[in-house]
Amino acid sequence: DTGVSQNPRHKITKRGQNVTFRCDPISEHNRLYWYRQTLGQGPEFLTYFQNEAQLEKSRLLSDRFSAERPKGSFSTLEIQRTEQGDSAMYLCASSLGRPPNEAFFGQGTRLTVV
Amino acid sequence: AQSVAQPEDQVNVAEGNPLTVKCTYSVSGNPYLFWYVQYPNRGLQFLLKYITGDNLVKGSYGFEAEFNKSQTSFHLKKPSALVSDSALYFCAVRLQRNSNSGYALNFGKGTSLLVTP
Image (cartoon, each protein chain N blue to C red):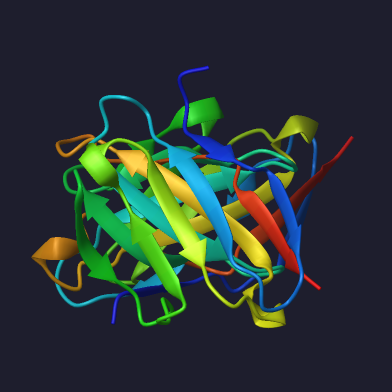
């Protein structure tokens, strides 16, 4: 499968614990995005990487959230001290840095904080 | 702020009939508009986009969308609906907050399309 891969697909954690998600983009895509989607809503932009550089962060990305993309390949999204409000689907997408530019999404990681 | 609105939570259409899923936008400058579809347990899939050029954009699976600048709309259409088109459809606009945003998108709330046999 040459699409965007996200792991794990599901994560249940206790409030206060730290969690880390991984995203493997399509290999030649230099742009990578993280979004969060809650039930009944569209995806909300969290952060954007161009190669290894994190160029944009949404106000939604509180200081408990951190994302990295070492070497411009896979990316990780870590949430520290999880809260029940963090429960959501976390989506990763990647795109080329030139037209056609449309993003390809992974299937997401569903986080449940209990 | 760049935003889109999808005024219908759900659209119901009989198989074989034409379908329209509505989207209006609010942007400063020229909009970059997208439609994505989300099937259960599957990731968002790109359908089509409008960047510039012809107002009628053709995309995947027989879908098309018409960019209407005067009405600030970008409605998704298909001449003949299939039961398999039943899914959640999202309209999106490029955030374009600054040159560092890449092609980050601002999505609408989504419209659930139900095509009945």
